[in-house]
Amino acid sequence: ATQSASQKSNIQILATNVTHEDLNAQELYPIYSLRWQVELLFKTWKSLFEIDHVREMKQDRFECHLYGSLIRILLSTMMAFQCRYFLYLKQLHEASEYKAIQQAKKALPLIASAISSDTTNTIVQVIKTVYENVRRHGIKDRRCQHSSPFKILNIKQ
Image 1 (cartoon, rainbow, N blue to C red):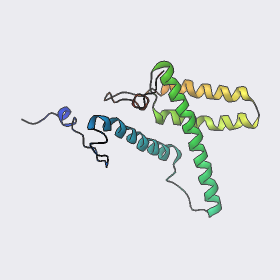
Image 2 (image 1 turned 120 degrees about the vertical axis):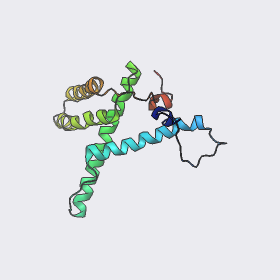
Image 3 (image 1 turned 45 degrees about the horizontal axis):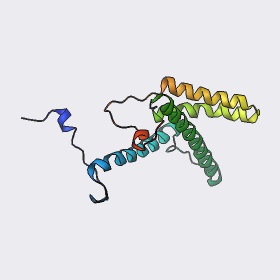
Image 4 (image 1 turned 180 degrees about the vertical axis):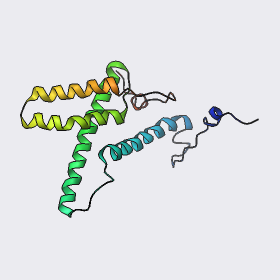
């Protein structure tokens, strides 16, 4: 008899240079899944910020473009992480990293405008709006009952 598709998917091979003496398979799996989270983060950056599409330009201009893109990525990711973190702490919901970064990226021009007009209340309101959008539209589906990065890292309320 052949195995069903669900039985076949229970077999996983993890390639690593960590020895069995350092970590057993049950301890290795959560750490390996965090590695996958890093891969997803890079994929999100590539997709949302189109860092793989660059026109031909002079080196000075390219460096400015690169630094600007990296600053946008950093600010968006930091804001998204904080939104995800507070959502997890307050409501035990995990938000999609992609959706959270997307919401934060959309808010960057509003934050820049608020900074240039020196209105702290507006900046706070924009950040609260990002959080609310992530809470409403960014909840992650738990398809395979994998542990969230917050659970793996033992981040508690």
